[in-house]
View 1: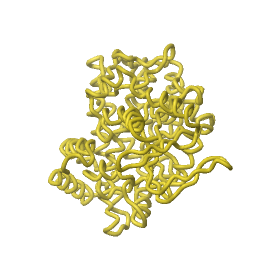
View 2 (view 1 turned 180 degrees about the vertical axis):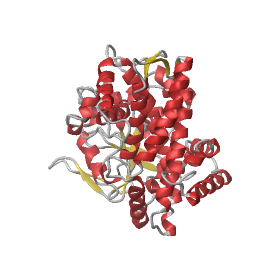
View 3 (view 1 turned 60 degrees about the horizontal axis):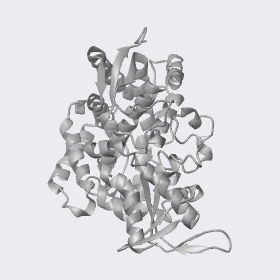
View 4 (view 1 turned 60 degrees about the vertical axis):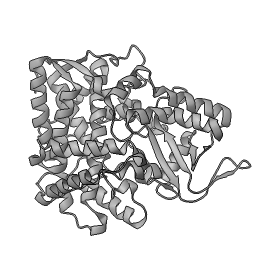
Length: 444
């Protein structure tokens, strides 16, 4: 596809992500996108493209850029499993968007240095472990901050996105940077400004002075190496200067922003789905609240939140060499340098292919159903899967456990996710408001 059709297609597919803010979400834009259910366009577009062109990746010729839109779930699996070679996560677009605040982040690194940085990230984030080795101090932070949040919400009888977000970032700063960073809003405010700059990629100048100050702040946190923090764990790891350990922290903070969005959406889902809420409370009641817990059902609920409303609406890869596609007898080659685009919402919410596409079904992540659909990738997949997946799920599931154990939440904003109607195609996390009441016998 080329010419005007190609431009119209890329505008249709990319508009929701660009309007919402690829790197930093724009609250006003999110409200409008929710009103128009903008993410549904990905589902409709992929269905139309398959009907017209078949299931192989569709090559789209743009001025100065060739894209391949992935249409088949099996091809999603192939692209992600074969990363970073020949499908490199460090795409042209990511470099432009992320370099303003994480120029040495693993996501935009290549070759030998990428392998070193990936290894360092996996060691610091305890990638393979369900419970991070710092789980105890992490849970203590969550208990303290969520306890204060709940008491405030119970006094006022309400909880809004602003209050939740402030508490969330207090948790994140302490988990990542140490307890002394709890009130250091300056460091995360500077990151927010740099991320907003990243929304515009190559189109506006980088804010080098702001970035330098932000990085200096991170170095001070690592120099302190407070016990129980990820910064402290990072400081204890051997690493060469080129690996830039401190340069990995900006992406951890960036990823925790998406985790907070997924958490408040999951809370809204529980608020409107009594059956799932009681299943979650049964899991909480059957666990030892005094020690870190894996909370499989609550983790599954976070995965569902990310499936229903992906915080990474488009996964991008650049091919480093020619790749061959299509069945025997219909082979075709896509040249090196092509950017491959996976529209996650187009696969996650496609009811023609996923029976539970538009429902809240945490059980799907526990009974094997989700695994049978290779295009359901809330944390990406393959060798470049998010290295902080288990850490994020530890924090988010514990936050949800403490909230659901202590109070009843009812969504009073619109839309209010519920099982008796379709879930919104786009859900504005900034507009969520809850009515809050103490549960009988809470807290435990």
